Every structure is written in structure tokens, then in C-alpha cells.
Amino acid sequence: MRHCLARIAVLLLAVLAMPVHGAGPIRFNIPAQPLDEALHAFGQQSGMAVLVDRELTARQRSMPLNGAFSARDGLRRLLEGTGLMARYSGAEAFTVQRVALPAAAPNPRATGGAGNYARTLQRAVEQALCASALARPGHYRAAVQVWIDARGVLAQSRLLASTGDHRRDSALVESLRALRLERPPPSALAQPVTLLLLPDTRMDCP
Image (cartoon, rainbow, N blue to C red):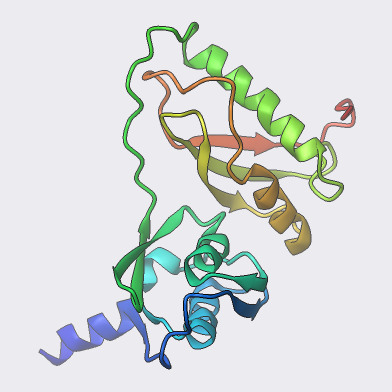
């Protein structure tokens, strides 16, 4: 019995929070850091109770969260790039779980297979990154997984390998937020899709 209780203590992080703030925006000041610590800070600043499986958050880093947001919008931003999403057990408590998107239904109007769609995704990602001074591709290496929903919206991303600069990591994830593609993904496209960004001086952002 003591062994089981110790196992639970290792896997779960519980934050006993203060009363939840009202429905209005909350001023957050949470720097990028190990995800466990960021969620602890989020619980303290939002007043929400946090129950986290450490196996999900191990070796994960959070995005920085600075500014005034609702609790739910702030948590969504904090988890971006981790491949995790919040699951609420009430108005004042949540846990986190891996992103699970339903498979896209076949679209008879969509032309081309997964290979053509990969090129569509590549163009859209390059354009999004080129719009950011920090995330402009061609001079750093990174790996990111993305999930695309049935509408063709990049619904979630997970940073697999850092660029080596936390500010650039944040800019990369921010650039991909809710990126909308030209068409929904084909049913043949396996998700999540892993993108490898390589240094390439030939890349010339418009």
C-alpha cells in the first residue's frame, strides 16, 4: 500500500489553489520553464487546482505567459508547443492530457494525396515563419510536431527539438498558432506530422 501511494505521489502534482479569480482577465507573469513548475505557477496565479501526471510533463518546457488573459486562454497559451491540452474537471480545476484529434473525414473535393498535402503544409509553415523576425527559417535547426483538424486548421503543435534559443522557440510556436491551410487534410495523412527545420542559406523569405 505504501508503495502504491508513493507511486501516485511521484506521478501526480497537486496544487492547492486559492479561490479562483472572477471571469475577467488575470494578469499572468510566468516565464518559460519546466512545465511542472509553470503549471504550479499558473495554479497560484489563477487560483485553479492543478492535477498533473508527471509522466506527461517530464522533460517538457512551457511557453512564457505574460499579460492579461482569461484562465482558459492563458492555460491554452502556456501549453502550446507541448502536444498537451487541458481537460477541465470543473470551473476551478483541470488536468492535462495528450492532444487527440478526430481523424479527418475524406473530402471528395480535395485533390492529391498526402504527398501533395505535405507540400501545401510546407508552404504555409514557411510563410508563417517568414512573417516573424525571430522565427525566420534558414539559420537554425528545430523539430516540431503538428496536428491538423478536419477544417485544415493547425490546432496544436509540439516542439520536439529546441532551436537553442527560448525566445525563438516561443516565436516559432506563436507563428504556428491556429495556422489555416488551403484545404482540409486527406484521410491518408498520418498525424501528428513531424516537421524538421534545417539551416539553409538558400531559403529567401519574401
